[in-house]
Image 1: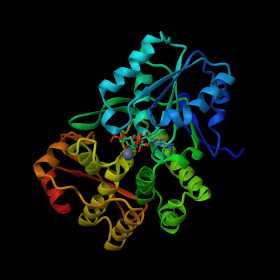
Image 2: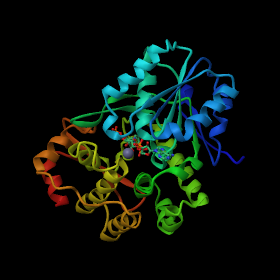
Image 3: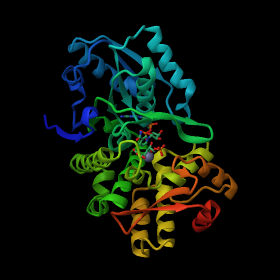
Length: 359
Ligand SMILES: NC(=O)c1ccc[n+]([C@@H]2O[C@H](COP(=O)([O-])OP(=O)(O)OC[C@H]3O[C@@H](n4cnc5c(N)ncnc54)[C@H](O)[C@@H]3O)[C@@H](O)[C@H]2O)c1
Ligand SMILES: O=C(O)C(=O)C[C@@H](O)[C@H](O)[C@H](O)COP(=O)(O)O
Ligand SMILES: [Zn+2]
């Protein structure tokens, strides 16, 4: 079995990302290697559990674990305190103690919520990420951002809490719906646009292979994305500085998600819209030229992702933007692309003027 290993170097909180095709069945031995004991609570949802819980349960039981399934309703609209409470209730009902641990089996919604439950249940129990969407494999399962949405803002409640390990089985992507797959490609574009120009070129050259889910192209894209993210997280775990670059496209993207009630756009689609607008804004500030901006727009279009900001009165956008976690007294830290493959952070005080650039 070919398994790549990518380290997230965080001192005593370091962990490995294991990446391969058909490796989900190794989760039991992985948990033993990680020194995890007690009951495993598998947090999943009503879509993913029927597909992959049996395989996870079999692997865990073969390694001698007791397994509990916590199956949640599916969707971004359920990434809230009510659903989080369902996890707590299930853990309390089963009298899980501090020797137990959580396996997050699903996409980013499950990973973020299960991770936050792990961070807070009994003041913290270990968890392992088993991401099953492209987006969660290249982004959300790595780096320890966990949490839930608030009606007025995305991910406003949460914690930095690192998993003990991340097991990425790209074979699970075989069952992922097309729209979800493309949304995951949106976050992959982000890494190329602001952190790695060669990777951006690779993506441009491999659009067809990626959309066809060619395993080689896919594994290369996932591995490169995870390596880039792991490096950023290793130098700035809690987003005191450089980690904010991973928010490229997210400032307006999160505003779009909030204004549409988390129900219209997938996260990766909203980020795609945010990146197209960010490229426009970057050009306005003089950080990139028309060619760079065109390349970003063209790649996003080739991947079948949206680009247009949905129409809401500017005051609604300004209100949503005012809750962005990158806002301080001196304004909103806006992430621009500097050419392709580099970034520039710009402090913006006039949010209305920012929106006028997008008009
Ligand atoms: N923590 C972070 O660093 C981070 C990074 C990026 C995004 N996020 C968060 O991640 C969330 C988006 O994650 P997502 O795009 O994975 O969405 P998601 O978790 O909603 O999953 C997308 C859909 O695919 C289904 N699904 C999952 N795996 C499947 C599979 N293998 N086969 C068939 N269906 C499958 C899910 O049930 C769901 O319907 C957002 O809430 C976003 O804020 C967090
Ligand atoms: O890991 C990070 O840091 C990111 O910003 C990754 C983003 O893709 C992700 O959507 C994250 O959840 C956004 O975080 P937030 O702090 O802006 O809510
Ligand atoms: Zn994101």
